[in-house]
Length: 267
Ligand SMILES: [Zn+2]
Ligand SMILES: [Zn+2]
Image 1 (cartoon, rainbow, N blue to C red):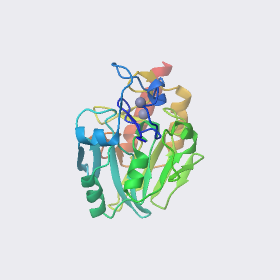
Image 2 (cartoon, rainbow, N blue to C red):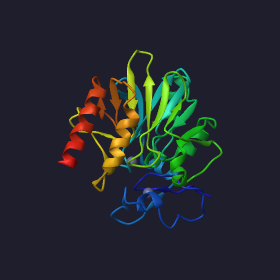
Image 3 (cartoon, rainbow, N blue to C red):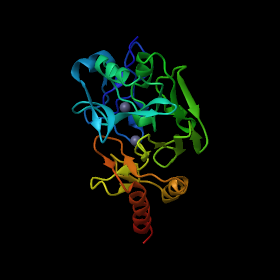
């Protein structure tokens, strides 16, 4: 039975003989149903229509679906002391992507910030030999295609190693997670998914409950995120998609953005 993929959010669902009646990710008010109604595709059909963009993004290998499909996130390969981490995921797996990853030592685990980027995570895990997928437990109910490879962490902080720490930011989703990495080149890097969104000027970030529907994040959630990130120092911030990165002075940019946001919503 095929595992249908929602054409609007790019999430692969559990195997069914017929397409699911709806996509709960898109029905949710953080997303939207496509303007032509709910439509579905499959991995094999999608792979014929789209290729992957596999390129360097500010020094890291990025993988994203080329051209216009669903949410345009790109995954990144992080070569950490605890093994190679594929941070985030996309809707199609290709042989070229697998060989590019293999050439860099493969992937030891997939870690994803939140449900909008679960995409085809099980397809990826299977193609990578059954590597574990690590998600926050608070978003467990949003998993559309479950697998024994999926495991959950809980709480606000999860240290994978001396150089990799997961921090629950919350706000956008209860389990929205940022990854902090002390990279071997000496730089400290924050990967926030879209728990906070790198702005177009690449000097600030924004905090929204829904980006496509312009729904603000609760002020209490913004404050809680600020508190949870306050103990970490980082220079660079890699946002959710290509080039949406703040290289240098990342922590100062985020602190200034928290300040600006809270001033505007409370004045
Ligand atoms: Zn959807
Ligand atoms: Zn999102």
